[in-house]
Image (tube, rainbow, N blue to C red; front, side, top):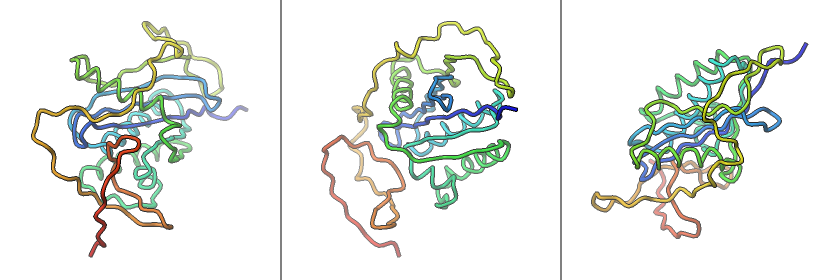
Length: 226
């Protein structure tokens, strides 16, 4: 008897301004790396972390609604990965409801795992999130997640469940990845960012993502939390 079907979801959430225009992207594949579908949605003005959680929820809901009882998630959000796995507490009042909903959905799966990966291993999900933000800026952003199925779903016995797909572009035609760059703002200059971080095993782990460019220098004013 074959094992129940499993999928792997690469997820990413981005925010231009943090908070600012935000979206998530999800690239779902088989364990062998074959593309299954992609999900992307512009979610308005919010933070990177909020967008990351929305991407996780989209992956969980897709797995449950399409008959995939086993899900592996790969994300470049170390904060979310550690919160979902129970290593970090969720202190943000905006993230707590999303965390609780994610845990409720995870409980309905036969197996679940989440792993932090570097951005280089998550390029497709990053591209999808940026494309959703670009489309929203041009007035084309979807009000619900956009799905782009690329292969048939699998039943629990491993046989194919075919679906007719219209307008799905082959993966080879997907646009090249774009860097997440800060966008010009019409609002006054933002105040200096103030974030918290946890120091563990000689490494400082920030509790949010910063929209920085490669090679950009920043000044840190580190203060011990009382």
